[in-house]
Structures are given as C-alpha cells and as structure tokens.
Image 1 (cartoon, rainbow, N blue to C red):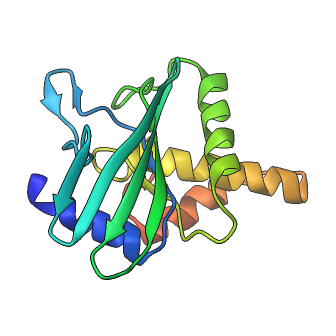
Image 2: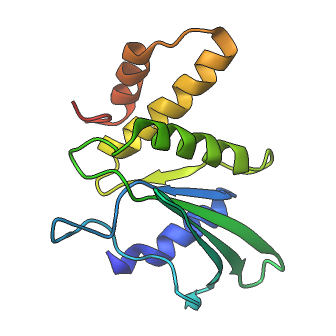
Length: 166
C-alpha cells in the first residue's frame, strides 16, 4: 500500500522509534506481502526525507540504516530496519537459533531513550506476534527466571485479534 508510506514514516518519527523490525519479505510465493517503504538512496515523502545510509547483508537478515529528517524539525534521526528474511508466511523460521540471535541483536541496538520498536509482517498478527512474544519471554526469563507463554499470548490476543497464529 504505497499510499501509506508517508503515514508509516510520520508514525516512526512521531513515536521516536529508532528500530523497525520487518518479519516478512516483500513478495512470498508470488504474492506481494509488503510494499517497499524505504528508498534505495534518498526519497522525500511529503515533509519526511529518508536516506538509506548503509545496508548490511547477513545470513538470515538484513540491517538497513536510514537518516530521517522532518522538514522544520532541525534534527536528523538514525533509524535501523532489521529485516528477517528466513521466516516463510504460515511457516516457521529456518533455524530457531537464528531467530533468537536476531531478536537479541535487535534488543542490543535499541537506544535507551528511543520510543517503541515498530514490528510488522504482512498482516501484523502471526510473525509479528511471535516476535513480540519472544521479546517479552526473553525479558521475563532474564528478570524472573521463568516464562509464561500461555498468559503472554492470551494477553496479546486480548489486545489484537489473531496475535500469534496457531
């Protein structure tokens, strides 16, 4: 949905998000799952200027670093997109250890003063929900020494229908 690209970047700016997590590919099994909302170089979306600074290709994911400016704000923000490529729709990641490493990498790169991490897949429920549950469970395991997947998923589903597809 190319017409929502500006809204996406405006939301990232408004919420002071420094990290975007993308757990879908643009096209899967011949179907478009997500529009390419980032430029290959520099693109202006109304009052938002987005410049791709760096692309790191890793075995199971890509890290893209952007400089984002909002006209009149007199500041440039660095936004990182972590794009996990090894997780097919309605499937499981190719390697569980790769996904855990990905989640840990995302968490380690999030600045303390940043807003919320933006997580998306194609529908915003299945893979997005799984990523969020893993993130919460890693924090819970570290903090409390136990995990409660059932209640975590139940709580997320009370806020978003179909979170974590089963």
